Amino acid sequence: MSEPEAFKQGLREQWDEVAARWHRWTPVMSAQYAPASELMFDLAQLRPGDRVLDIAAGDGYQSIAAARCVGTSGHVLVTDLAPEQLKYAAAAAREAGVSHIETRVMDAENLDLPDASFDAVLCQFGLMFLPDPDRGLREMLRVLKPGAWASLVIAAAGGFPESELAASIVRDRLGDATPPPERISSASLGGPGALKRRLEAAGFLAVESHEMTVPLRLPSTTDAMRYLREIHPTLDEMMAPLSADERDAVWRQVDKALASFVGPDGFESPNRVVVVAGMRPRGATRLSRLRLGRVRLCARR
Ligand SMILES: C[S@@+](CC[C@H](N)C(=O)[O-])C[C@H]1O[C@@H](n2cnc3c(N)ncnc32)[C@H](O)[C@@H]1O
Image 1 (spheres, protein in one colour):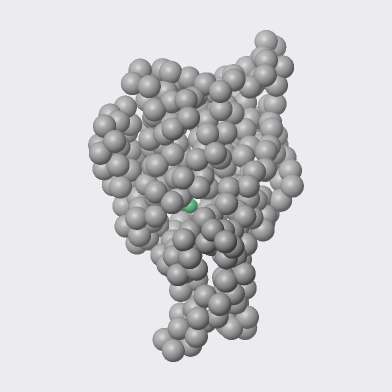
Image 2 (image 1 turned 120 degrees about the vertical axis):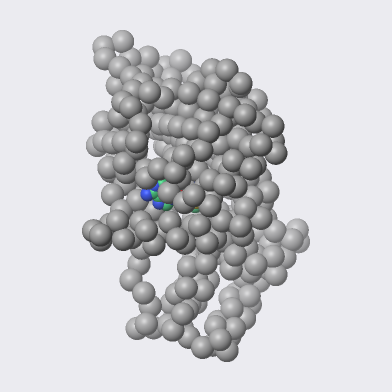
């Protein structure tokens, strides 16, 4: 198995393993990220009847919201590398009574889909996991119909201060035993203008990029600790070389440090994300949304 394939296999196992815990936090995440998802839908110009591809969709809470935007005459293909995540997506769609959704295990770098077959491509917090994000962007461009839009959400560089604080405490404690960083970090994709330039290099037109704050709000640091431990299992994994007592000591330190995010209304961390969109060229008669003005086509959830 090639090194990138082995990396993806590892990711698939991690995301399968975390699926049940991830899904328990869906109500918090979908509320927190709703403004970013809505901007992603607006920039993708989702309309009733559209055929939409959602890439690295996880348990699909944003796919269900997209399905509501395109209505029952539309269709959302919900894809992810991790089959367990998609089981939750399919179950959530059934529970929500949304039947114009289909789930398929698929690698974002090798979309098993025909050229020019989608009216919109969405990808929320997925691109940073690809060994070759430029290849992922070229795949998005390939499956879009000419004149259709891809729209992505990623973490802004330094945009998740509570996670970064926890990771820095873990790294300090590990010292030389710290594992090497992920291949592509949100710092390299989420820096000012970085993803916009990558979309342009991949061949997208009229690319626009918006940074926004989506605060993580939880009742207390106890909840924030649970959140970090349950949906960021990499922190516990990083600490594998430590004894159970040492790990508990690190978590106590993280707990203390998180107190700096507590205000009168509980825990609040000013998370920041970047929403970027670009259009597949359609030839000489390109109509730019910038010239038409942006229209909110999707009702608020
Ligand atoms: C942070 S989650 C995002 C899930 C969802 N879009 C959301 O916003 O909550 C990242 C997802 O990317 C998926 N993923 C990682 N590498 C992938 C790849 N090469 N192709 C498709 N999905 C991938 C993981 O399985 C995981 O479900």
